Image (cartoon, rainbow, N blue to C red; front, side, top):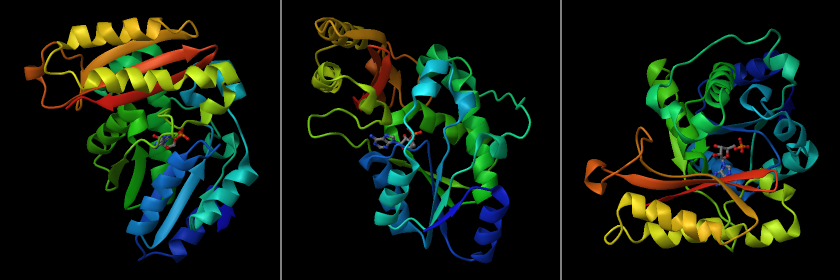
Length: 278
Ligand code: AMP
C-alpha cells in the first residue's frame, strides 16, 4: 500500500494507473469494521482501491468534538493493508485548505433537517471536502455507509447538482454483536455508557417493526419514551423521515420508503443511528 500526504504525489501515481477502474472510500480514520466493509466492497468491484483519512475541520461545528476526535494513523494503515487497499491519502489540513474555504452549497430540503438542523454548516463542510477529494482522486465509484444516511443523501445530491461522473455506492451499517452501530466515537464512551448504548438500536428496531399498528407520530413517541427510561441518554432528536428528501413523514401512505433516525448524547459523545421502516 502506498501512502501519500500530498495532492501532487497522489495525482501523479493515480495518473500512472489510468485505465484501471478506481474505487474510493473517504474516511476520518480511527477505522473499524464498518469502514473496512466499504474498503472490501471497493476491493471486489475495482482494480484499484484508494482510501483517504482526513479529519475535516470544517465539518465540525463543535470544537471539542474536533479536538477529541480519535487519531491513530499507524493502526489505520495496518488495517487498510490487511484488506488490500492500494493507496492511502492522508493530507494535512494545510494541504487540503491552503486558503480559507468560502464555497456555499445549497442542498435544498435535505440539509435543513436532523443533522443539518442540529449541526449548522456540517453538510457544507462535508460537501466541500468530498468534492475536493473527488477532484484529487477521480474515482469511478465512491463508497459511503448508510450509518450516515443523511450524509449519503447529501453526497448523492452533490453529485447530481454538479453532474459529477462518480457513481455513489451506499453500504449497509455494520454493527457490534450487541447491535450498536460501529462508530469511531464509540471508543470515547465510558464503560457504563458503552453498556447502555445498544439500547438506541434496540428501541429503533423494536418499534420500526410496528408500522401496521402505529402512526409515525406514535412510533416516534414510543421510541422517545423508551429512551427516556435510560438516565444516561439525552435525546437530540428522533425523527421519522422519507428515504429520499429526509422530510418528516406524518402518514405512511405519503412516503414510498421511510426510516427512523436517532441522535442521542451519552455524556458529551453524540451517537447517530437509523433503521429502515419500509
Ligand atoms: P467517518 O470516518 O465516520 O467519516 O466515516 C467514513 C465512512 O464510513 C462514511 O461513509 C460512513 O458512513 C462509513 N461508516 C461509518 N461507520 C459505519 C458503519 N458502522 N457501518 C457502515 N459504514 C460506516
